[in-house]
Amino acid sequence: MTERIIFYILAFIMIVLSLMSVTTTKIVRAAIYLLGVLMGTAGLFFLFNLNFLGAIQLTVYAGGIMVLIVIAILLTHNVGFGLPMPDRRHMLLGWFAAAVGITVAFLEFTRHIFVIGTENLDDRVAKIGADMLHYGEGGFVLPFEVISILLLTGIIAAIVIAKGGIPHKRPTPPSSKQS
Amino acid sequence: MHGTERFTATVHEWLLSIFTAGTTHFVEMVLIGLAYLGFFAIAGLALVYLERRIAAFFQVRLGPNRVGPQGMFQTLADALKLVAKEPIGTKKADSFLYSLAPYFLIISSLMAISVIPMGAGFSGFDIDVGVFFLIAVSSIGVLGILIAGWGSYNKYALIGALRSGAQMISYELSVGLSLLTMILLVGSLRFSDIVQSQSDYWLIFKGHIPALIAFIIFIISGTAESNRTPFDLVEAESELGAGFHSEYSGIQFAFFFLSEFINMFIISAVAATVFWGGWMPLHLGGFSGFNQTMDYIPGPIWFLGKTGVIIFLMMWFRWTFPRLRIDQLMKLEWKYLLPLNLINILIMAFVVWMGWHL
Image 1 (cartoon, rainbow over the protein chains, first blue to last red):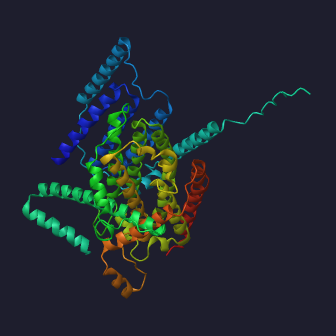
Image 2 (cartoon, rainbow over the protein chains, first blue to last red; image 1 turned 90 degrees about the vertical axis):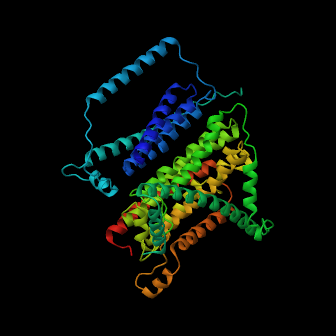
Image 3 (spheres, each protein chain N blue to C red; image 1 turned 90 degrees about the horizontal axis):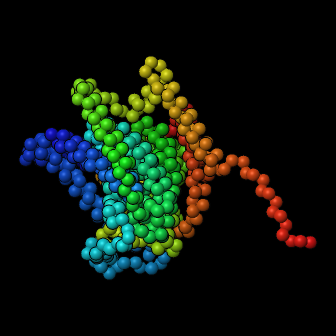
C-alpha cells in the first residue's frame, strides 16, 4: 500500500517535471527539471528494489550527464534570459508530434498484456559482475569489451581534439625593423 | 549480539506492541529520518565548534570560549542568529534555482550518510551496492554548487561554481578508484560486509602497502571533494569573496555551511569504515584476551572516535597547507593521483591473487 502511494507520487512528479522541462523557455531550468525526471526514475528503481540500476541511474544520468549538460549551458552565452516563444508553425508541429507520440504509446500500452513477475530478480552486484565477464552461455563479455573499446576510442578522440592535432609550424613574423 | 543490535530490536518490539505491522514500518521510517536529521544538526554544530577551537589551537589563540562552558554553545548561538536572519538575494537572479540549490547539497549529504553503518545494525539503508550508492549520491552535490553559482547572478559565484565543477568531477575519480582498491580485498560493496571482514585485522593492515597508498590518495581526494583547504578554490575568500555562496544569507547560507561540514564528516566516516574498520573494535588476529577487552568499548564510540581522528587530520591540513592554483590542482589529479591509483589497483589485484594479504 505504502509502495503504491510512493509510486504514484513519484510518477506524478516525473510527469509534471517532464512537461515543465519541455515548456519552460529558460534553458537552465529545463535542465534542472530534466534532472528531476531522471532522479525520479532512479527513485522508481529503488522502489522496485533494483538498487544497482538505481545507483547506475544516479551516477550516469544525475551525476554525469546532467553535470555535463549544466556546465555546457553555463559556458554558452545569454543563458540568463529566457528564449523567445517559438512561432505558431513550430508550436503546431510540436503539439502534433507530441500528440502522435502519446497516441502511439497509449495504443501500445493498451494492447500489451502486462504479466506480474513472480520470480525474484537476482540483483546482487557480484552476480552482475560475474555475468559481465562470463564468456560461456548467457555471458556478456563480448558486448562488455566492445563497449570498453568504444569508450577508449572516445577518450582518445577527446584528447586528440583537445590537443588540436599536430601543432603547425608558426610562420616567422615579417621583421618590422628595416635595416 | 552487539549492544546496538539489541537496542534496535528492543525498539522494534516495543513499537510492534503498540501499533500494527504496517504502522510500525511507517513509524520506524519517520523515527529514523528524524534521528538522522537530529544527528545532522548536532554533528554540524559540533564540527563548526571543533573547527574553530582547533584553528585557534593551531594559531596559538583561544577561540570561542565565552558562551557556555568552554564556548560550547557559541555555534548554537550562531545558528540561531542565522535562522533569524532574512534570506536576501540578487534582483535579476533566477529566484527558483537560487532557493533550490541549497537543498541539493543537503539532500545528497543526507542520502550519503544513510548508508554508513555507525554500529552493528545501525545504518539506515544497508544495500548491496553501498559504496557505489554513496559515490552516486555524492555526485549530485556538484549540481547544487553549479546551480547556486549560476542562480546567484554574480560573476564571482559563477567562477567559483565552474571551478567546483571541474574540481569535484576530477577528484570523484580518485575517490572511487581508491575505494575500489579496498573493495578488491573485501569482495563486497555492502558496508556491513566491509566492516564485518575487518573483524581480525583492519583493512589498512590487511592490504599493507597498496592499502596505505589507497588511504593516502583517498584522504587527499576526499579533502578536495569536500572543497576544503588546500583545495578550496571554490570558495577562495581572498579571490572570489566566498565563491558560489557569496550571495546567500540566513538559513540558506547555513545550509551550505552545514553541508560542507557534513561532507567532511562523510568523507572521514567512509575513510574510517573502509580503511580503519568502522565500528569494529581494534582486533588483532589471535590475541583473544586483547580482543575481548577491546569489545567492551561499544561500536558507535569506536566509529565516532576513528572518524574524529580523521576529521582532526583534515582540519590539520586546513591550517598547514597553502591553497593550490587551479592548474596545479588539475595536474595533481590527472597526472599524479589517477595514474598512481590505476597502478595501485593492479598491485592490489596482484597481492590478492597471490594471497599476500593478511
